[in-house]
Length: 600
Image (cartoon, rainbow, N blue to C red; front, side):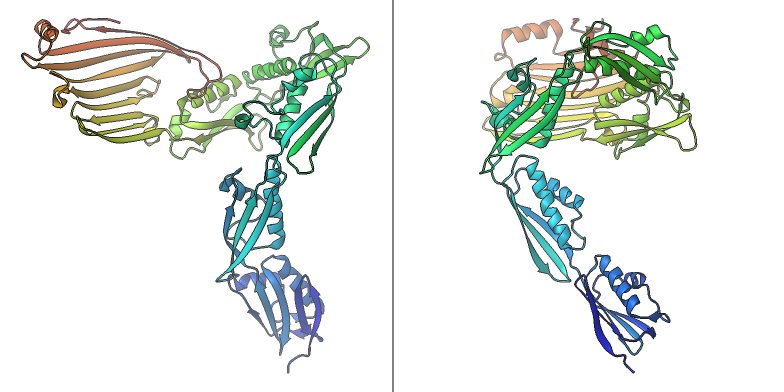
């Protein structure tokens, strides 16, 4: 006999229909599922065959199922002991299309949407969609576009899917109309504004965009002003407040910064305390601050870092150095105490390498100057990072120290790299009336198959000039870092084929070279090469001086050369060095068996 049915309540837009009387569940039937697995419903339902089902159980089941976010509507009915759960699933997001966005690329905005919880394949939730719209607006507001409009359009698709079209109307960029700094007396407003990247615009603002307001830029500029003051004695400088206002049409920005300069302080003394470990004189030599100096925050921090790095060379990876000020406002002086806590001396248990998809582990590990199962050395860690940067294989190299669980004297060093393209391919074709079809191609790869070896191939073919070159080098021919490279080439220059000359010059040769490291920054090189040249002249047409050359050296010449050199490279990067030098000296000379003798 069927139970009497009634509507017991509505919960979060869900209809609830249950029997007035409690009953024992004889069977459970789920209706309305399209994508969701029935087992998911059973797991959240909290009821199984044989259980007693009543009003409270029904309310709890509906609430639990609705909170999963999978369903737009949930109904529970009872009929002859059978519990019928009817659901209406929320649609899934099949595609997200963004139009009208020029300030950001589509990938950046889609990442912002993912961070807000909206992405393709996920269940559509109107709350999350509203949050996603606000996230896009937030991205634009950070770039000074306060008039941005974001609209979304939902298009239902088959199989309960939805396509989302997001249209962005970016509006005009709000440009800075004025920047006022209130409270400055030690320096003029002009001097302080020169420390900031933001400005009211100039001749090149169309390129630099320095008149376009953004919160990030303003925060960076305020920090630059703070650094300007604190590096010139103003220990207690503070930015009291910042007001940013917009014009009614949201196209002009007015910035007001209120600052408190405070007094100008002089350093009255520098002391050291804590567990020094090293001679005090050695540590004091690392501090670029002395009594009588005008307070300088950067120099003070540099001293702390230098001490920490020095302790790191002794194995103290987690050394802490804090500066404690003792301020005498009456005399406008400040004394600093460097409090040193070296922590425990640690050794490196393991070096972990991650992020290298193409590059082999051994290519990275052979550049590491820090060894496993040895005392931690900060200088070796820094040197290892520089060597990896100088390979030219990576966009970014980071090294992090991780404490080993259950041990207070071991760490793991995590080396994470982000690879970049290390090869180029160029190809070209041309046509001229004299040389006809001209083809050229070149290939270079500085990290062949992830081995760290370099290969370059070049081919050029035309009627007048033909070239073929192959060069290969192995930077670790030996485990000690001795490099070896060789090249083979052939060139033919025949201007007679185009009617523009009266001779043919054919050249082919090869060479081998070695590089031997003698220190971390210095190396010497040695190389030997040979070249064969053949000169063919046209009697009665070629210039007389060509025949004089041929008479003296012959139609064919063999040249054997030896090269040697020295190089010092202290750069921190090959592509974008920020410090260091590259110096080199080389000598090249022919051997006695050569037809033509020279040196340079």
